[in-house]
Amino acid sequence: MRQVQAVMGRALPLLGNDIDTDRIIPARFLKCVTFDGLGEQVFADDRQQANGQHPFDLPQYQGAQILVVNGNFGCGSSREHAPQSIARWGIKAIVGESFAEIFFGNCVAIGIPCVTAGSEAVAALQALIQTQPQTEVILDLITLQVQAGNWCAPIYMGDGSRQMMLSGSWDGTGQLLSQVEQVKATVAKLPYLAWSC
Image (tube, rainbow, N blue to C red; front, side, top):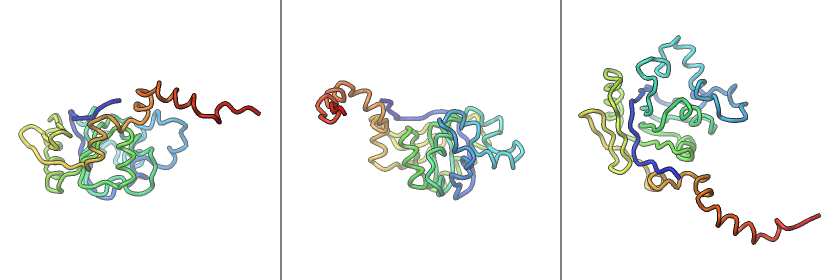
């Protein structure tokens, strides 16, 4: 199981409220059997319309690991492809004013902490990243702070989700694999697995 206590790296500012999952990953990409390759299609339509000027295309943000967004990010349909595409592009954490509940849950399920901060703090962080894109941002789930250079602000994540990140219990598959002997013992006791026709 992988504990997530802090995420450090450069950040990418994505301005605007109510950015929905249809924009994050357009419906035509939902036919995939696996999530492989979704990172290349994140914000595909927005990026095409921006003619190379979308933040996900700008050279100064390539390799960024922290996404900084505004309010109600991830609203719309409940597709798990949205956080998967963001993660496969390279994002490991998201700071925002607020998140749609299902999007938030889908992020936690794949180990991406979504933390909230006040609107003024988010705007200040976005502005800082725009003017100094090489600044390393540190999102600390232990101290509940986000820091960029000399700038710092408090962040929030609900206790349950935060503890899942800190302990690594967000990783359901990892939990099963770490308990494989107990799983085998339980399976051996199940009478219906011995049935024959």
